[in-house]
Image 1 (spheres, rainbow over the protein chains, first blue to last red):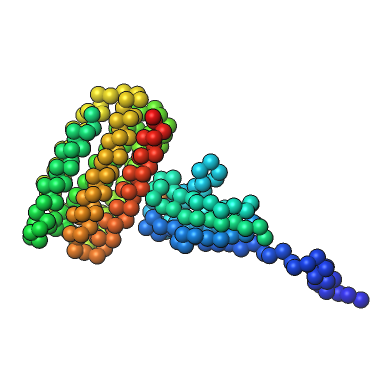
Image 2 (image 1 turned 135 degrees about the horizontal axis):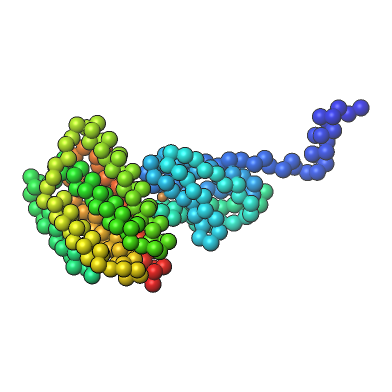
Length: 104
Length: 174
Ligand SMILES: [Cu+2]
């Protein structure tokens, strides 16, 4: 008789590769720079911006979404669809980043 | 309306930049700290005038951003001069900046509504442009303390960001 765990493994194998687990991708903001500037994520992953500045920043995609990142705080966004977008800080539009989200 | 004072400001920076060839005339760190701090204070004062006068949401939000950012930079500047035991020293550039800003505020005080909003935002674009120029060509190259230089470089990125932000707001007011 198959143990419950083995049954689970068998099921996962039967369904093909287990779905990739969601990751958290960290972007540091320091001295008005997003780093890394370019990030890649899968649908379901979380982007976490860690703001080391004493200034408030945003991660903004015009007409789509905006994340407010308070001074010395972090803020997150879980990406829900595949897209490749430039984002910027609305307060300091010279701060720019790029996000590529792929389907898992 | 803001153009005349911008020209005056440009002349001020030109005058202070001119003696650059003689190393002895470069602003000292205490003077640089004073100029940078003054530039921030003046922009906060301009923003406070806008907060009193404007009813346009974009303009009010922009002015709030200016107060928040420049107060944050200046707090860092004060912490740094304290740490370095530097006493900011008043100088002709700071005095000229202060005078030009007072004239600008007096002009803006006479305007109302959309005319004020447009003039304030245009004046912010011009002001940040001028300060960026001074930071890039005079203040950053002249700073001898590495921490002061680094703070000025962050200040430059903040000012450049504000210039673009102001240009964006100006575009929306058209
Ligand atoms: Cu920012």
